[in-house]
Amino acid sequence: MLIIGEEEFNKSATVNLETRLINLFLADNFDLFNTKQTKLLSTNDYYQKSYYNDIVLKDLWDDLKNNRHLVDQTIDFLENSDIYKISPFKSLSSSQLMLKEAVIETSREWLKDFEIDQGHAIYIIKGEAGVGKSVVLSSIYNEIQNISRNKKSKEDNLYKTNNYLLVNHNEMLKQYHHLAKHLKNLSKNHILKPTSFINDVDRGKHEIADVTLVDEAHLLLTSKDKYNSFDHQNQLTEIIKRSKITVLFFDPKQFLKLKSYWSESDLEPFKKQYRYKEFCLTEQFRINAGPSVINWIDDFVAEKIDAFPKIDEHGERYDFRIFDDGKAMFKAIEEKNKQFKLSRVVSTFERA
Image 1: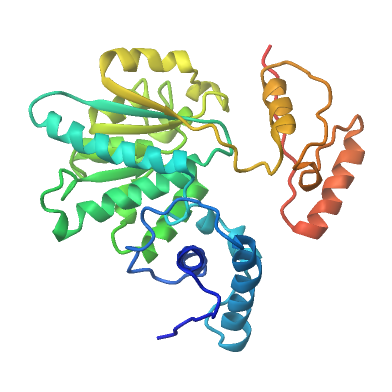
Image 2 (image 1 turned 180 degrees about the horizontal axis):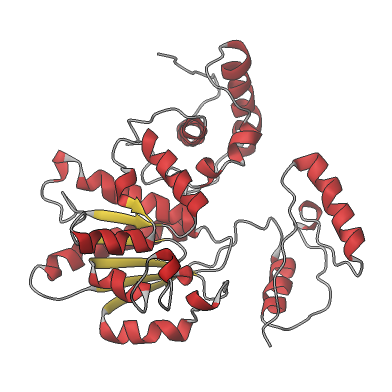
C-alpha cells in the first residue's frame, strides 16, 4: 500500500488528483478494481487547480516513475495514448454528465416499458468532432455494466442486463478490448463490430441485447457488403431489431464512403418508427481556442468563408494559419512534429 499525502491537500484537490491518477494508471496497464469515488465526477474549477494539476501531479508521477519504479511511462506519453482518451473515468463536463445520467435513467424506464410490450427505442446523441462523444460513451457503457453486475443493484432495471458496445474501427476495437482486460465488469465478448454483433445474435451466440451503444453510428453500412459478411440492407435497422434500446453516437458532418452514407434526414424514418430521444453535445474540447477561431472553422465547414479570425483571449495558445503553398505547410507540420510528436496531415474533400 502506498499512501500519498500533501500538507496543502483539500477535498477538491484530492478528488481531482485521484481521478487523474486512476486514468494514468489505467493507461499504464494497471488493473483497476475500485472506481466508486470517480463515477459521478464532473469537471469543476477550484482554488489553485493548475498548481495541483501541473506541479503536484508532475512531482508525484516523477517520484512514482524514477524513484519508486512503480510506473513505466511519462504523463505526456500516457495522456496521448488511445487508452487514456477512452478511459471511462475521465472527468465530465456538466453537459456530458447530464447526458450520461439521462441515458442511464431513460434506459431504466424503457427497459421496464419493454417488458409490457412498448417496443424498441433509440437514443440519438449528436455532436461534431471534439465534443467528447467517445468519453461519454465509454463512461456510460462502463456504468451500465457496473450496475448490471453489481449484486447490490438487484432492484435496478439494469441489473443482469445483456449490453453491448459496437465499434466500427479495428484499431478502436483493439483499444476497447485492451481496456476490458483491466476492468473487471467489461468483457471483450460484448465489445464487437456491428456486423459481428448482428451475425452472432442470428447464430444464437448472443441473445438479444438490452442496451446497445454504437460508436460513430454515421459509419454504419447502408447497403449490403459481401466482403464484410453483411447480407442485409441497413446495419442500423438490424441492430435495432436485435436490441431493446439502441444508443447512437452520431456526427452528421462525417462522411467517408458511399456504402455508409448518412445524413440527419436519414434518421427521420427511425424516429417515426420507434420511441426516441435526442441530445446534442456542442462544447468543444479538442480545440484550445476562443470563439472566433471555432466559429471560423464551423462556417468554413458550412461552405462560408469569413474574415480571418482575430486573436482572442485564447489566441496565444492556438496557432491558426492558412497556407497557399502546400510544401510550406508540410514543412511547418514536420517542425511541429519534431517538437510534439503529434502533428498530422489530414485531408478532406468538397462535395459538389
